[in-house]
Length: 420
Image (cartoon, rainbow, N blue to C red):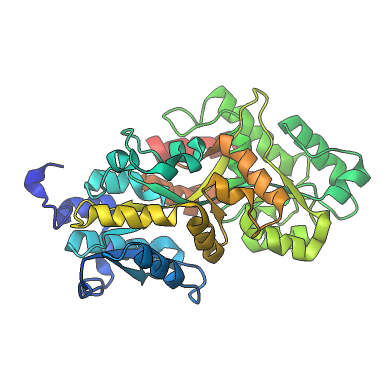
């Protein structure tokens, strides 16, 4: 995209926007939905955010910031999340209309698109003067870095998937919490008895998060040819065989979603499953000390993969108040402010200092999250990823588990989806 077909005000031309953001975005009502607020004395920063619980409010943090920075007023605008569709429909539309906020909460799976649109302000130079930068671990900084090497995102919160397991059932079966694929298979087989299955596998929507640790961790990748290499095919055969040959998945696995795997684990129908710290308090309420967590198992070569769930803040290049917006988002990612913020979201603080005295989740689940960061990754930032998650993966996974296609056919379908 050149400067000839875009202006700073509009961010990007309508035709290119349709290619990048999807034509459906402009079908939703947006124009004029968010009138610019009246500017008080000094500088006004507009910030968009979303909380799962609409009763939560960042008003306390806004008041604290404004007291510490009397020349800056923050207008925090709560935008419905709607599974991500509502939030990003409105954000992309506002960027096109020239009515975007100065800064907003954003996720990694939209970073490449926003970079290509030319609407993100690089933060590298401003970050050089931010003393609290080192309180965020380098693992998190690297995960948030764009493909062009620049830092457009300021980390705000995260979760990472790990393995939940039942220590009481493991002790009864005489097996230890798994560290490798071989350990996992041994434990799953030993625990599958008397109406209990070794692993509560999510074959429905979102189940790619269960497949990833074993297939991406086993050598597959999303580069051209990466789903049909010998290692990738072998890893997927091994994973599908857990259900079709070893029978360590419940019969309902091909269609099980989030609620089914969590309820099955809580009820004692499964001895292991995969999710993140967001479900830990629910698990402890049901099981007490009969639930714990470890990082997902690593593959035969010692490598591993697990899914990183993120939320960051970004400053938009069309903002007339970039420095003030940067000051606000760094405030939210600093020490006790970040801890307070994540008290509203239920996710983990990105700060090392905040994590040292974290009280929102039991320590064993926080430690499993931290230990998993070294192998955390994200799905490709590609328009094709949405369909992979929604239809391509679950449809082919279900058919493979039901014996309707081979595991290799499944991988061929994924390869074709991404690379033709």
